[in-house]
Amino acid sequence: MVRTYKFRLYPTTEQLEKIQFTLERCRLLYNRLLDERIHAYKMEGKTLTYGQQTNTFRERKQHISTLKEVYSQVLQDVARRLDKAYQSFFRRIKNGDKAGFPRFKPQNRYDSFTYPQSGFDLDGKHIELSKIGQVRIKLHRQPQGTIKTCTITVKNGRYYACLSCEVEAEPLPETNRRVGVDLGIKHLAATSDGQMFAAPNHLRNNEAKLKRQQKSLSRKQYGSMRRRKAIMALARQHERVANQRKDYAHQISKTLVDNYDIIAFEELNVQMMVKNRHLAKSIADAGWSILVQFVTYKAESAGRQVVRVDPHNTSQCCSACNKIVKKTLAERMHRCPHCGATIDRDVNAAINILSRAMRQVS
Image (cartoon, helix red, strand yellow):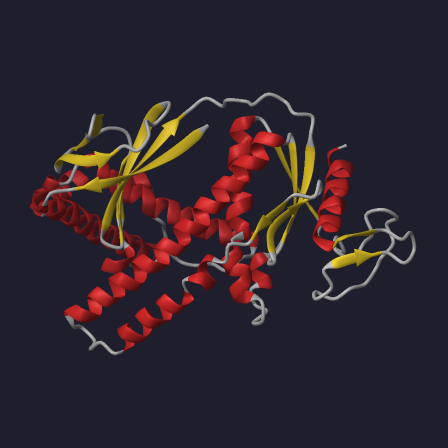
């Protein structure tokens, strides 16, 4: 299996210029290759392939000398990235989804380049990048397995190296325990055995500061240096909120994967749910999709099983007698008039989720 490690880079001024230079060369090449594909289809009715375009790189370097200053495999990855965009475009058309034709990339939409096989070497506190030099890296932990690719990413003025490593799965010992998890707003997650994980509301807690920064940004003159600084400050604050949300999801996902063999969730359509203007901000702030994603990939490496079930009536159905007991969102307790069961509505839903998952597994 493949696992990606993300480390902060601290390039010098000269190295920073080289990274930005490489990004710009890759962006211009991507746009040129896309333009050639569009032109070939319009004029000749054919689609250029990845191989056909990479075979032209040697000739391109003779006419565009700046391409010689970028590592050859980085340029090849640009063509591969465009080819993947086309494959995704054709797949969406085949599946009947929104087409989403590949776009030309402006400067603010192209923020990474990749060393797909070689051209990089990790050495202590530095990483050697071909055509760029030895860049200082903060290794807060050692990457495991064999490093396959290295992607240099720029985000909000900070530089990162993402190392994709091929690692062997490390199954955890069996616990013979199973759990259903109900995702909510008041509690981020409630388990079928009564455990509650509070909703930290990171966005709500930082909302006042974000509003002040947004108000300050709106007063800045377009194109000014102060406006660019305000945009950077606002983006970094949003990134901080996102990192807090991810950190909390990592903690919960590790707890679930360490303690249960089978973990069941509802198959929620979050994109449709956030269209409810009354709950959209709370749903987005909770980060349900992130939590499920983290549990899924950790379960895969730990030998656990994640099951997703139909969410229909999990909150309305009584977990004791299977009778439907209608209740509003304001009612936080499940009280069944048929069998007399009284239980927290989120725990009741989690028990129903686990029951459906076990029937589905069996």
